[in-house]
Length: 105
Image (cartoon, rainbow, N blue to C red; front, side):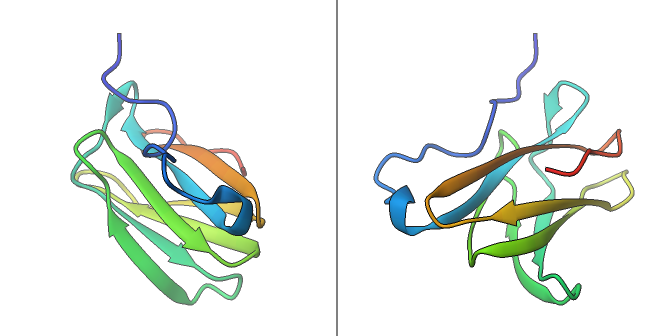
């Protein structure tokens, strides 16, 4: 089936109880997108951070609690924005399909 791994990177060794984690995977259909960038924008749209996706399309941010926007930039695709909420002790696990407009997480 697909080469995409569900969810973000392994949480082994991460103290999730004291972190607000936003993580996930970027895909095109069923295939992971490994040459993409995911930006973390605050609720006013200001740039906060950016990470590249891994070879398996995975990414992770440690964010403050609140509302955030993930902006995904990938080759041969339009930018995709996804609203996501972060909370201490919660892992917000998202899938960004750059071929489809994602639903709010």
